[in-house]
Length: 346
Image (cartoon, rainbow, N blue to C red; front, side, top):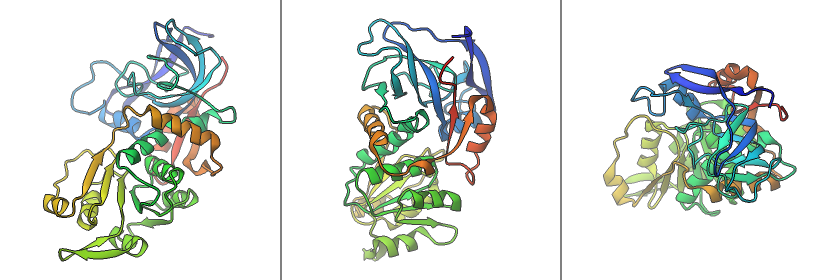
């Protein structure tokens, strides 16, 4: 390493994110140090910055390190870590140490310490052909996959996705991976919907032009139960975080429909509990924790798929253009997944 310090992106308060000069991490017991090669910008990163913390309720006691969608190369290994050698190319599951989400470490930096370093839990070796930027997609892809597993989605299901942002698009990719072909997706941004079509959506609708119930009625079919209309969709996946959209889904969901909530919601939603009871609707939440199996499946899929996933990554910025990357990621009309890249050698 050329220096004992490095820049690390940390949130100091609402709208206040800085590249702080901090010590380069060293290995302790059960830890590894990874040279970051690529780190995606997540919507939660933008929320942390806007709110000034994880929840925006209490002032930060210390700056919040961000960055949790990343891949790179192991450069040092502490004692107690088995089967890991310097030079190993990996994607990292951030869950165990809350990397970039409340823990002391964040991946928007040239180097990161990975606590609880373990193959198949935190460290996932990369297929030789898989570039680092694409490998960083394993984290958001596993978010989508985990939500689908919780909702017990099968290849035979008719599925609708609310929101064609990065998580909605990643969920679409994983639905295709699971063999689901009957997928509709909804958004208000035409550019996002164009990406969804390129990734295999059977129907991509701008709800400013056509309502969700109307579009799903013609795509998945419709019917009537207890005097109320319903659409033939089996599973709704909420990747939008819109209370109005979710309320609309509840109003047209069929008997035994499932609703998977992956999006972050910042406002409570009054629920029509009679309709949920009468139609035996299941609502499941998914925070994508304890998802090592899904993370590994996403890495394997990235290494094996013949599907063109290039529509997922809209922009790549060198880390020196950090603030430009954040501004781009916040522009829904321009950006899907924005990836920060780093030199692969010191």
